Length: 553
Image (tube, rainbow, N blue to C red; front, top):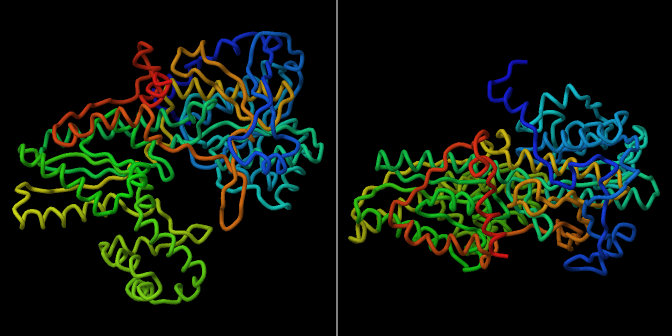
């Protein structure tokens, strides 16, 4: 297989580990703290997880640990969407297992959780793992969005693990995937299977974090990749001086990516979904905010600019969220009747009679091509696929309409030419930054230590991430500590709560202090590409979000 020059050089990169993991395996011990509690719904969660609830925080330290030399057989799953660094989690786990005992084995389940359910796996040897070190993607074993939910799926997972003689299963994923890990750990414990389950925190969206999980892996690399692209567009806009660029960024439930990219590139406008919801901003309010920036810059002779839009913002706009909820209910309830209609025009007319007055008015006000996107193929649960709604084009077109009216009224004298972009998949499988390469390798190695120490129902944790890697604090956090109860598809279920942008937190407050000046003046910053070679202050620096959060503590 041919590889690029950069890939060859990245193969040689040796990720840095926390100091506590740089000893001989038998000298790595686990210190357990006090019993933990969930942040909410404690009694209900205690009943749901009688065998795994209330476990203590685990921290790695110096001390004798004879279990570290045990021969182990472990399975690993990459679950959900790709995130840069997943291969290094596997590399860290593999290296830990082999350092502990050369006879230990690592199996990769193919295609995500379905690989465990359907007993599809491959034995990962050193040659295979070496081909994927410090590279992006999940292609070593593939990923999938299946969940282990039904009694039959749990039973099949146990049969697979027993059949392979596994001591443990490691699930690399986001909040839903690690919720699945908690449920699987409880199931195995209830049946005294002797099979441990450990999670690792992955998601480029950055919404899997708390006091003990400072960042989900992949967020650093994805944001730096998007910020490079945004900076390139800003430079082009400032050169051509004739286009407004509307850029949608990943982040359906939370706006961490948009906020981080704004801090890195200083665009003219950046929407934050959480603020839109908190302020009850209507679609008109948002369009007016964008148009105010366009008009103010036109007065300075600057008929160009950049607008950042999180992909999930449409759900946070009150009237749009209501429309989506009504559409979901109608199409679940009367899906067959809707499917029998002949084309978008007939579908929109039918919906006009079914929707409430306000929602029908909103749908009718949308540009026809955008309105049709609300009617596209549903997700597996029958819901609108929000990520496929071209919000950037919606806001661009509505801004165009509003500016035309403003020009007729004498309130705008500029020229408005606009282009739209969606940066999503471009960031999910990039070569991981040094930070993510180090962080992911440490998470994988930490998962090995948790397994060798006999722990289950934990997520691998590495803290103090703004310090140099040798000063990082590695350990494990009980998965049940991160959970609460939420209504999903009409049922109350235990889930790991998503971490949204905190409007009183240091990253947002830093952004809010500067955005009024950015809206009018050209203060673009150009981060450039990810740097892999050079001084640590260039190559190893974490995200601004993480630096501001740690500084604000």
